[in-house]
Image (cartoon, rainbow, N blue to C red; front, side):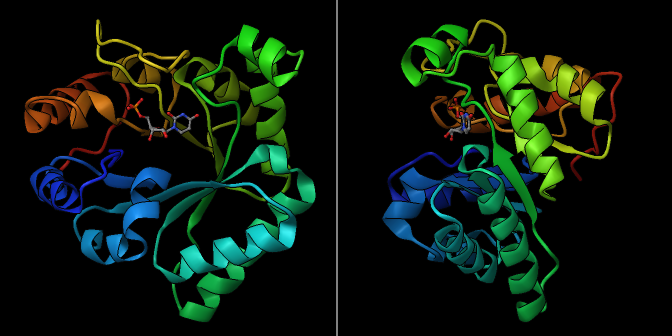
Length: 239
Ligand SMILES: O=c1ccn([C@@H]2O[C@H](COP(=O)(O)O)[C@@H](O)[C@H]2O)c(=O)[nH]1
C-alpha cells in the first residue's frame, strides 16, 4: 500500500488501521521528503515489506551512496531507475549487498523502475523521445536489470505476462497502476485490476489512491485483499 500522504498524523493513523490487511507499506518521495527516515522506525513491525520507492537515478557513486543510506535505515525493498544504465545498476546492487552485510541485515530486494505507468506508447515516443513501444522498452530494461543482478522490476500490469514469459518465474514483478473495476485511472495510463495483474503473474501489487483517497480506506483495502485471495493464483492469505 502506497502511503501517499503529507500529514504525519494521518500517515500514522492510516498505517495503524491498515496494518492487519496489507503486506507492505510503500513510502515515496512525497512522504519521505517530509518526514525522513523516522517513517521506517514507525512502520517497522506493522508490515512485512517496507518499500522505499525513491527511484534513485544519478551517477553510479551517488546512487550507491543513496542505496547504502536506505539499506542502513532497514528497508527491505528499494528501487532505482533502469534508465541509469549498467554501471549505475551494478553499483546499486553492490552497495545494497555490502551495506546489508555491514549492518548484519538480510540483503533487501532491489528492483528497477522501467517505463512509468503514467506513460503510454504515444507519450513515450513523442514526449520522452523513446521510439519503441512501451512493452519493448520495459522488456529491454528488465533484461538489463536482470543482467546487472537486480531482483526484479517495477512495470505496469500490462507488461507482466510478457515479462513472465520472457524472464521466467524467478524475477520479482512489482506492479503499480492497480485500479478496482470502474475506478478512475487518474494520471495513470497503463492500469488493470488486482485480479488481472495477479492472473498475468505479478508478485507484488502497489495500490495508492484507491485506498488512501477512499472515504473508507479499510473497506477499500479489504475489498482488494478479497479480490487478491479469491483467484486461481497463489496469494498468501493475510493472517
Ligand atoms: O511506474 C510507476 C512507479 C511507481 N508508481 C507509484 O505507485 C503508486 C501508485 O499510486 P496510485 O495512487 O495507486 O496510482 C504511487 O505512489 C506512484 O508513485 C507508479 O504509480 N508508477
